[in-house]
Length: 131
Image (cartoon, rainbow, N blue to C red; front, side, top):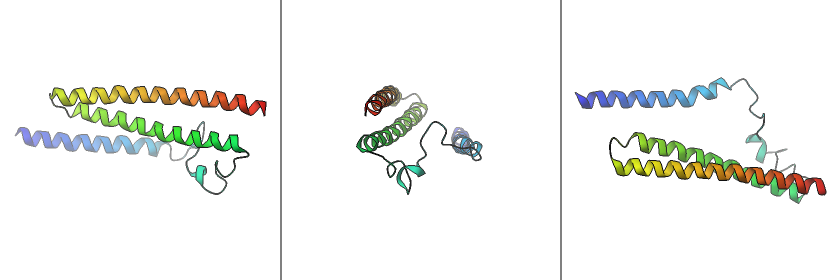
């Protein structure tokens, strides 16, 4: 009986996860996603950010921004993984501790990424205005 309930709950969790991942994307289906952030499609293709770099400083800045974008996405993925580890621990202290440790490390990574983004933008603004 408990196994049946547990399997039903797992199916419910997976359905809720799928809906939670799908509906935010559907909500932004009609809006412009490029506000405040560079568009992934415009980074590499014809007329993209890398192709339209005016000088070496601009090219390096665009490469650093792409790397920060990718590392930020990985950090958010690790937050999700740590939450999954913590939720599925089911009383296993070792796995719960591993989930907490992963979450702490991922949050530290996000803070470092945000600070790096700020530093890069300040340096680019300073170097760009002096050239």
